Length: 77
Image (spheres, rainbow, N blue to C red):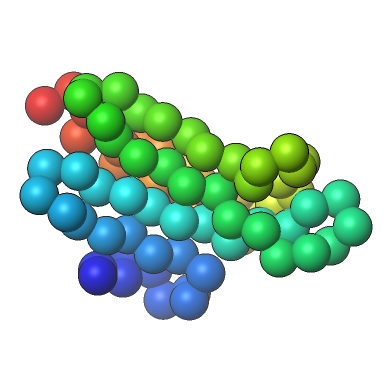
């Protein structure tokens, strides 16, 4: 597992050619949830909490933006 940021809510992992990013978030009643960003067959996949709405703080939004940027770069390769 590689750490993409000093914040523990950000994790980037590499498995072969697939890269996965997990960003902590909350839901509308402030329970801890996770967003996952993946690259699968050259496409970026964003997986939210099942049946929930993801609520992100400013810092979590910065992490999501960075993960999406990295995933888009990888998907283009």
